Image (cartoon, helix red, strand yellow):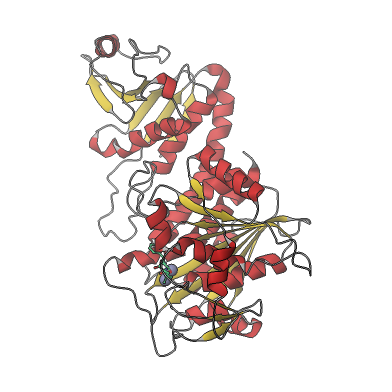
Length: 495
Ligand code: BES
Ligand code: ZN
Ligand code: ZN
């Protein structure tokens, strides 16, 4: 898609008008609209022939061959940022059904903020994963969108569009990684892509901790999960502006490139979807891409814990006890609760090797979180109320909801109740499974002091329900959503 802003000259094609419930005539401003089309639009609005409900559209034809689309925004008093983003997404998602690849959108009377929201929705929705289709959709001409807005906001809209392009590239990268089939996306492949990616920028660095080194360093969680696969595990570390001094965010991702469950094998139905069990790492990689493209000048580190969870003669067994990087031992009671094992090493590394201002982990961690929150919100746990509020509010700002969930001592106690090791990877029952998982992770967040009074501020985001299959998310079609790249950009850059 080619999208730009203009205050006057238009491209040919279809005119797009955003209408509110109760509008009786179109907002003037766009040049070159055929008179007959204008009259028709005004006729439709004044006679209430289009209800302007949010999410509804209608196409109108003028006598002189001109064409227009109305996109409803609902009642003006109920206007939300997200509603405008959704209108932008709707233009793109309904595009295939219309012949005409050039649109002039009348955004006169709208603020720069609103114009950019519309653009954001359109840009996010302009994505499809066609790498494995032998018949490419080449003939589908690229969409051209001209945002026609008031002269005085043109400059800020243009700057904003460049910014949105950078952010969208991060979201789309995350989706590409999440959608990639698991035969082509495995730990070293993720690492190879990260190394190749880093070459584009001179302020990013990617390092890989390979299998042997992980064994040597004592990353028993990562090694335990990944050793059953021929395609061995690794940890990939991203550094943006690594030379900068001082505290900085550290993002940690669960990167299970395929989760069969291991020896505790999963049932068959929908097992294919477990290719997106690396969504947490895709979020981290996508965020690094967005920040690098934005030329963000602060320091940010990303740690992705990559492994394939397979059953084999080399696989770990239920009953095994592993020793993690922290020195803590874990009794592995179910090999399908593997995300928390790789994260145990990732979180420890995040808090000990870096000057972490805070740590945020992203993980498609539990089916229980999908039971609790469906596909509508990410589960959010934190040992720091301030961090939790900041993440939640950044998420609200960008329309990616994160819902606070409890970190209770009782859940932690349940997880440490192993007969033979320091802790265990399974609670006593299924109940509260997303919370017991979060409590488990908390044990691997380092303290800043020997008395263990000040733990590094940390938040855990369970994206099992929101990284995939969110049908109410208008910003995406089928597959990986690329959620939380935008939340992180908002949180980290403050913009
Ligand atoms: N990757 C799954 C969680 C998951 C489930 C993600 C559905 C996306 C959709 C995770 O590794 C897992 O299998 N968790 C188990 C934990 C249980 C064994 C304690 C689960 O949720 O059932
Ligand atoms: Zn699992
Ligand atoms: Zn998993």
